[in-house]
Length: 341
Image 1 (cartoon, rainbow, N blue to C red):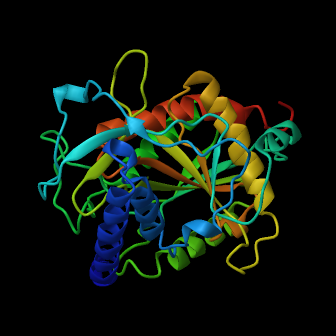
Image 2: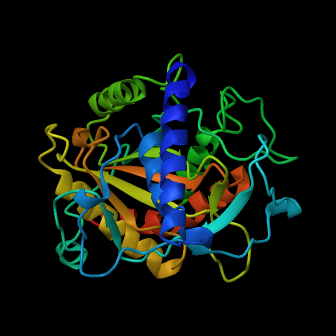
């Protein structure tokens, strides 16, 4: 956040107080009561505006899934932080995924139809096939005794051993194990100012595509932020072995903001293809696809996706395991799209 962080924090606080008060009036309790606050936090973290509830439309006749309370999983090294460094309680939450979508646009794509159409993407047999970048490079997780860092801002650090770059390393390695050639661009895009992060990451993507025009898939890897002014949430994939892992979410942009993005449906088709592939192996790993009006640089490639791994309430090890599980399912699905495959 840095210089712009104070203003955004005040906005988030005011919205949070209003929304929680509104939730209390209608009698919502437990983990579902801050759901609107969670949505607001996501939009603020991505730099998007907050849209009125009445502007949201359903993607399908199926009601939008709501988060449910999740059991605290067994953490790596028995480290299960129950509060942030600032003293806010951390509550586990599980978002039911599958082939579902949280639609914040006026479009109404049918996911089953997009799945039937296929991703409409072919990866080259040689050269770089996948690019990983990080718009918000300093995003970090709740520290533990074994993963403790010097914070540069709330839940952020410039130390690449503990921020989202480390999760990107894990994802890149897992995708490479599936037979893909991955370029992990470690350019720091949110320094010296958080403002302008997307301009800098967009420039990094354009430079990589100019040097490697064969790149077919571009992943902008992020860490989500789910919180109110008094609670921080961690996403939990409820795995059969009970081990700790965060959840993963695709954010797909459109031209709903008025910015040119004519091929956004191709981005969405790829997200649907990968969502289905991952869900087949790990039914609780994926959160619903989030379709938004903002384009988040995804106009730069028809194979570009923004992926959120875990939230600020998760630990680094939970996020790394989520990235590995995602890669082990998405990697073979992408490898199947290679020329001659």
